[in-house]
Length: 488
Image (cartoon, rainbow, N blue to C red; front, top):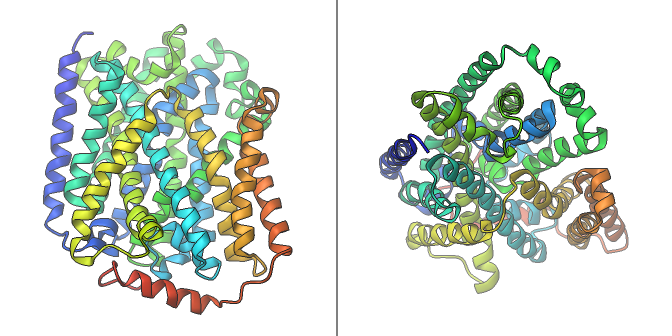
């Protein structure tokens, strides 16, 4: 492919820039809390930058462009669902910053009297979930890089994994935050430029109604997808935001609750605006090359339609999408591994003095696992949707019941996890049901709520007060979380 080696040079330059940022930030990393939570001092601009960059990740760029290529305005559902998830997060969970949690599994256990079974079981699920998301970002970035540079997909996955792992290993969560701000800016500007240029190529937005099937140009692509599948897609992304550990990590690492609320609100607004860009780009690519494999709609525009300098900007946007999401999930997985999973299997927590070293070793192992997990996967949207439906719906329901229903029990929490997963599996193995629903998220949520409520009602009430549970968790956290900054 023409300019393939030039694009590879751009990629290398991009990674080198991120590494320099990681080195610069690493001077602030002195403790495990600094490496894993950025010192719990994120302000509104930093929180906005890192949250938006992660929201506008692999799925909402390359994945949503692919979806827009196939289903028209339905490509915007990814961003719309994500923005709804952000707004719900503000009302439902932003206030948990005051408890100084380190992980989502710690938060979940608090709702159930600091129960060790809830914490242990959910820590494993959340670690797997983070690896799953990380694998999705490796997959998306590698498809993109392989198309542009012509290298084999396997090696593209290796290169993408190495790309975001190296600067995260150096600077930890602060490196993630600062590089996210840079990547989010590149990504937003790149998509705005790409949207404007592609509209110019096809003769304006009116070309969609004139040349595309009616279903694709219907309201949010409902005519193409169907009402229930469209609703399911938006909902599955909203659930992903509400239950994905990396977004909880933003809450725990922010300076205070007010910062969380404002940062998430601005992120949700920006993401809603952004959501229509990938749909427009996808539909434009469809008009320019209807026979194209939809998975390559995004890189096709970068390499085949526009000159090199524009392609380089688009390449930067695509790489930013992958890395801004991948690095966040990697650092979140490491926090869960060292704070919760390690304790589950050893009965103790890592030494404070060696936390930074342990964190770097765990980060390397986590990225390696995600790389292995991504091998063989080919579709980003399906990969993410099915993963969330199977794992995340039960986690969200367990959090909602535990936080807002006093009668919820730890047995009910575990039941909601199994109820959501089993319901999801039942839908996934039945082609007719899967076609009807689009993805399993709606029945999965119903199954999780039903199981959680039923089991809670037939099991004894928990006897530990929230104050007692918090004291127990604070005592544990003090072993690894040095100099915690309180927030309200």
